[in-house]
Length: 285
Image (cartoon, rainbow, N blue to C red; front, side):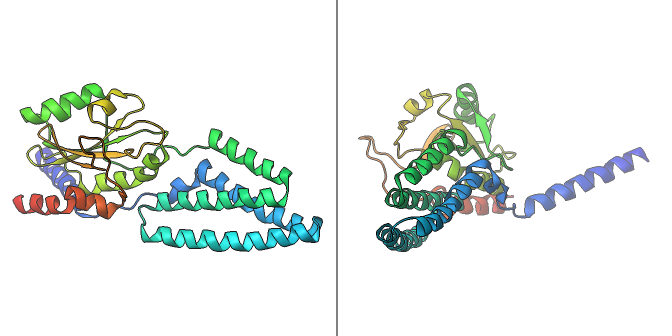
């Protein structure tokens, strides 16, 4: 009787795992937009209408006319810029970050026209927001493993060649202080949930992350620029049997970096052939 019960439990576990693997993973949780970084950005932006009303009532006619005209022009130009951004849409996180950037830049300019004190108020708010409410790493569901120097060499380089680990690894080299890395992080987590197949050592694909701020030697080993204005953060590299076969963005031996790289989900899937590899893996099974 005990054997029958154990068989039943094992069968139910198999059914559950099969059903969970067949269902597509849910998109990244929108709760990440309730963090202090996003909430205080919204609060700062909503302060401008209050100062706008104050300027209309308290300032002279010439200043009021300037503020009204410049506000209309800034609203038009910001809206047009964001519409153009939609044509090269990467991720929701990146688009929201662009919205904050352009709106806050317009507010800073308008506050300078309105009143110098208002300008310094917004400037101070921007400064303290940058210090205290920086965008953090995505902490939602993910199958991406965190690697250090030792585990990278042991699992990606040595383990793959000896057959001890999966042959293919898609590694995201990033720095948590670089905003584009954190903006792409939820998309990378979603891709790991959808395409990671680390259980299959023969043909599986494992997703991983390598923090270059903690181990900067990895940037030298893989030719990644780690400076503040770097166009190579994040960098995705696909390893097969321990060797690099593709990266995003590409970089030539002369150090010329690929221009206009859009880190969207569709582009990552196309660059690394994630959907095609998934189809081949299903056919082999």
